[in-house]
Amino acid sequence: MKKLFLFTLLLLLTNCFGYKPIFLTTDLNYNINDIKILSQNKVTNQIVRKLKSFKYNDNKENVSIEISSTNEERVLSKDNAGDPIIFETNIVVDIKILFENQDDKSFQFKESFTYNNQSTKFDLKLYKDNIQKNVTEKIIKEIILKIRSLQ
Image 1: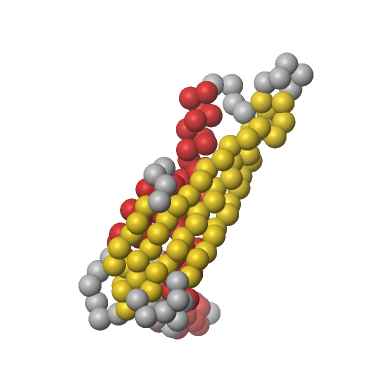
Image 2: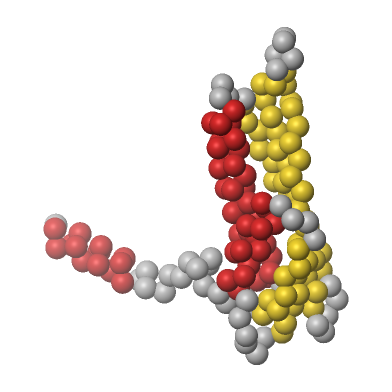
């Protein structure tokens, strides 16, 4: 029984050799030539830092990217004293991809998250920054997938 289990396990492991994580490879259909920042904030800077790893010289078609983002925070709920209880933050990223030989393409990515107020403002800021970073990472993955899917 042990031999059958080990054989099955070995067979399954050898069939996984072709696995390749999609976000670790830098195989894009296009070469990112220039990244232009239209609005300067944390979200845009994080996106630009991630996309700079895809800037390399190849024989692929060159594209330029224009990025702008907005980060809006609003209060959803207040208590009887007028202090905020629940916040909502909306992150909107607009990307325009400029091709050399094709029409330009524009995309908009929207994410929002809600969070509760905390007793200390320091903890609230750390929590908000952490959530914002995670949401921005999700948007970056969507951007990379969108660029890869362009033909």
